Length: 473
Image 1 (spheres, rainbow, N blue to C red):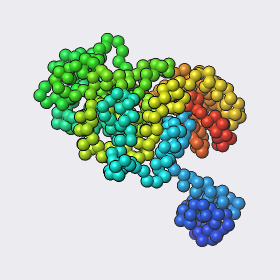
Image 2 (image 1 turned 180 degrees about the vertical axis):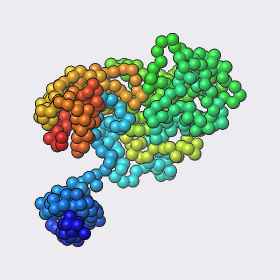
Image 3 (image 1 turned 90 degrees about the horizontal axis):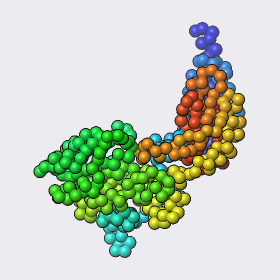
């Protein structure tokens, strides 16, 4: 055995046992908070880590288990070990409805409704008037019909499920003509042709990518046709020499052949967005008034609610959809219904909608208001970053996101952070990591060799500023 090995062995023998460490007053206090099992796991992990460090650093590694350091080390370990991986973040990317960051923020009314039903039992499928079993759709169907003019409605866990369920119900083992220009792909390589196939239907492509005419649909209709389908291309646009068949025309054709017409609105909206200075998007009410039989859309995009898929339209078709066994596999829980119901209630007061629905409020936030936020933060941020970074206020463009109005950009303002000196790429990556490591992570975007923090979605300015003192660079 070499002298170095003997030294390491001697140092290893000084590492205290698990039992000894668990008797330390500081560890006992942590045990009261996190429990004996979890604290014991933490102690063992620290001892194992220390033994590994001894092989590399020798005597210095023992300092890690000193009484002074032990409490802090264990506390940090336990906080990280016990904290959920899903947490609140600051979305400063400039994309309001960011799929990776949870899409629509919910209004307080929806959050309160979720908490209330989560606390205990609820009448999710219990009819209080008759004392018999009820239907969970009863909690939202009437108000959806009121706001859209539909005869009936049901809700599933997202819009993809809504499309899948409708197609499987109405066109299983049948053909579905769809314009080539509407065969969209959304995030995660999710494609309309794949959904049609999984629903048990056969896709019949009609027209071309840029031009589809009514005769293309008519030529595709045959004895095996189950329905006609129109897809709103909410996540891209085709410009130039183009033509698409309007919903009214397609509805007349479908009716002439006694076929249902369904339209997937994707992001979906219940109100005319142009009233708020936003670009036009077809509403569910408008689409149904064009003669479409079933409309599907999302709940967590332009509607500003929780993740959900709305299926609205003709009563007989909705009834058939609800009888499909797949409906149970895609249904929403009591918390989602509570949140969606609360958000829909806000739409009964259109005069205050942009104030009370966070999605609309963020989308309509004036640039000058965002710039005031940037002005108030440039000092604290510069101080937190030190002299190795320069911070400036910039004009930038926000986007709606999540497949909603892809071309349109919203005038915004933000903070541009540029590293000084060499190896700017490394400095930016380290800065991104530091922001992500904050108690409430900050998510921005890299653009033109700078970290851009678009402040459109920043409401909690005071909380954000307090975070900056915890920035570890």
